[in-house]
Amino acid sequence: MLPRRHSRRLGLCVLAVIVVASLPHVAAKGAQDPYDSPPQLTATAILGGGVKGPNYQIAEGVRTDEYFHEFTIASTYGSFEAVGRSQLATRIQEVAALAALDDVSKTEVFLASAGNSVVKVGKGAAAAVTNPEATVKGLGAGVKRFGVNLGRRTERAVASSGEGGGDGGSAAGNAANSVLGVNSAMRRWAYKVRVDPYTTNEVLRKALEDIARVDAAGSIATKVAVPIPGVVGLTSTVGDLVWSKDPEEVRKHNEAGLRALEVPDSVAKALFTNRWFTLTHQTRFVTALSAVNVPGVADYVQTASEAPSERAALFFVESAEMLQQWHAGAKVSAVLTDSRALVAKAGGGQTRALLPLDWLPWTAATHKALANAATRARKELGAVRLEIKLSGRASERAPKEIVRLGWTMVPADVKK
Image (cartoon, rainbow, N blue to C red; front, top):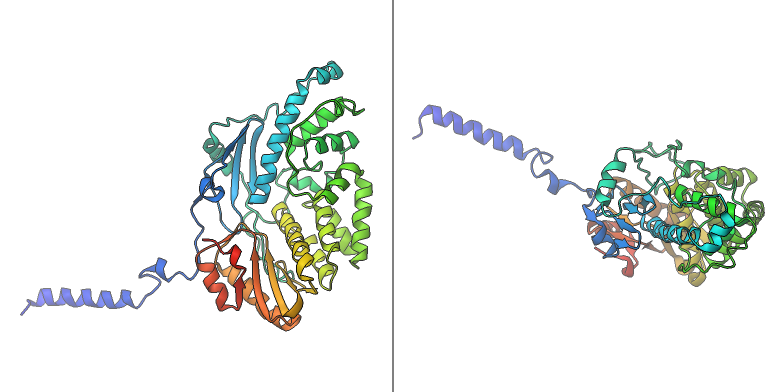
């Protein structure tokens, strides 16, 4: 028999075990968490190599708080951030373009035309390409994070970190004014190196301005060969418009496209004056939706017109392009209204949520948005089969949870 002192101590220990066992949020909290935590990923793991190239290196540290990977690129011409893999591809091409323009600025034919005009591509912006991790630390403190909401437009999301209307002093904050100063010479050189003449990359924009100033007559462009690969993110139709037409002509073309979609003038104006939509983004968006033109498309223009960040604007552009691609084979008949995630119906009740995301985690926001979209798609579109088309990768948990809501992932897109 235990002494009374030891018996009392044993009783208290048993009571403590019972109390703790009754609190599941205390015991094994990680195992009880119904949602994913941000993944710990590296650039090499995401990209499968290719983190280093001529004049650039991508830092291994990658942040993925929500739906997009956030990369930092150290280059010979400056340090750049890219939110999402599609923007990363654009930034890498822009580094190649800067290198090409740098080479042009040193040719004899250019120097002969320049006279006393000194052009130094990327002057004052050069970074140590050999130390991208230091670049990450230097930029991290001042970076604003821009999320993307997949829910209903009419449900105002609580502003998340960095998301909102402030311009943050960035080039993207002045995207609506990016047409100013983009003359024919700039467009000619943008075409020469296959980049967006309305880019939000300040270093590239300055280089295009400087080269164009010297070569206003265009005589140098015809004499210099520039080996640059095909442009990232621009179809031949969109590229021809933004390179060959002046901004006013492109704007009129886009306005006509929205009128054909029966978009109200007030909504069209909101899209065109949204500072996060560059003229090129507007053109890509309108061109894609014009190829579909079914009920609900005009409403999606209104949703996109409220984009609160450059990343959100690009999300809407890429969603519309995914819709255009699917419509080419499946013949879309309607689009779900009042939804940031683009949900479209084709023949036989086949309905897809088109998600141009790098990463689909299972979070409270994802759960709510996809549950609501499933219910509404069945009721408002008459959906029979619900599918998710994802451009990137899903977490291990997400596909399992999505099935419980009635969705299935397109098999080729399910990656762990």
